[in-house]
Length: 319
Image (tube, rainbow, N blue to C red; front, side):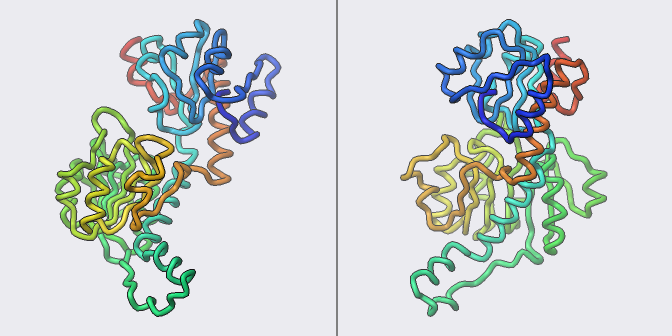
């Protein structure tokens, strides 16, 4: 185990008398290089698992991620060895959807500035603030996967006009939820009041939101990125905030984490920030830990579910 997780995850593994559990004292490359040789499974949360590290164990059978994003794992290398990379599918989706609503509401109400006004004794500023209504506003949800599918009905409950975009759409579910579904999000940018990103980070989504996309957005748009930092061109977003094109941005993830104190999004007054913990509610942390451990056990026992395998398509092609 490269990182400490909820005790239920440890207990699930340690309950088996045929498994020895080794918990890394830290997740530095030096420590992991010392511990990985000979292991059959790796449970990972935030540690970086490079090809060089993973190659240290000839006995490796599975890497199980405490979450759903796998950009900290050398997935292609794992696939080349026909080893599954597992995810805690669905464990934290609702938590991230709620986190997104929290940011959306905070930015729409300019809660950071209002809080500061009260702290500064500036009650006289109360009429300077004008809330942006969620009701009758258009929200564009880019990524209609596990999180997007939970976020859409939450937005609907606020009376928002919901548009979901994905290259692999579940149109039946969209129809059931009463939301409009499109494959290309770009034509929807011009009149979206809120844009929320929920896509994985890969070569096709790196800087998915860049200068052109920001320029195409409606003046005063609110942008939420609870996906991965590299999905957004952060310098371009900072410039759009400076110009007022983007009225506010909710940012849980950064290209380099942690960001520096002088990062333009960190110091910007119209951002609401979180330290990449949108999935860190009590229920989701417990569920993710349990699922992380269970995926390892299921691999050892030969009963691993397909929906838990991040690199399933690659494994099938190789097989």
